[in-house]
Amino acid sequence: MKTADRGTNAALMTTPADIAVLRAPAFSTLCNAAFRLRKDVFVREQNVPEEIEHDADDLTATHFVAVAAGEVVGTLRVVFKPEHAKIGRVAVDRDWRGRGIARTMMVTAMDYCRQRGVDRFYLTAQTDKTGLYEKLGFTAFGEEFMDAGIPHLAMSTYAQDH
Ligand SMILES: CC(C)(COP(=O)(O)OP(=O)(O)OC[C@H]1O[C@@H](n2cnc3c(N)ncnc32)[C@H](O)[C@@H]1OP(=O)(O)O)[C@@H](O)C(=O)NCCC(=O)NCCS
Image (cartoon, rainbow, N blue to C red):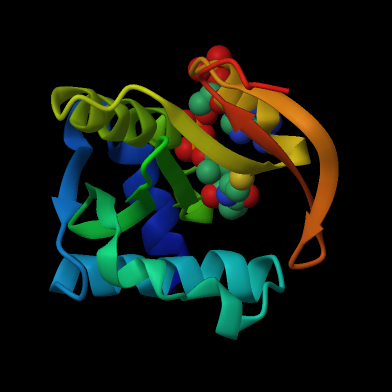
């Protein structure tokens, strides 16, 4: 069986209860798997330059992974700033999309922040993905801008001062 077929079959046989979202310390085995997934998704699939995909924030960020069928199939990171928690690098393996994994990771990460007294969230979304984040309480603001050749919009869960 080809690797891709294995992934597709595993995804079809997995229920939401079989998917775990875990916090993964930077450069742990799970986090390194997340970095590989990010490279597949952002660098290979979306043509983001590798030198900007992996950045200094990875050293201090809080990383989350979604694990299913023994593999890391999703990831995101949270960077704590003075004014808010910035969520980024949200990526789900192609075979596992459309099963609520991004939403589950976002809810877990936001709960983690709220338990630590942080309830203001910010992110920059690829413009065609804003619907995902609107369902989680984010609102887009400001002008569209390009990042790594992809149109983006800033989004937050709290009102912006203008
Ligand atoms: C975008 C991405 C992370 C979504 O992951 P996913 O696990 O398939 O998303 P989910 O299944 O958790 O979707 C949750 C909800 O958001 C919606 N949603 C998902 N992707 C969406 C999109 N591109 N546009 C609008 N809504 C979207 C889903 O329909 C779902 O709605 P529902 O709760 O009403 O059913 C995934 O497609 C991906 O990794 N894409 C490539 C990398 C990328 O673009 N990352 C985001 C950068 S901003």
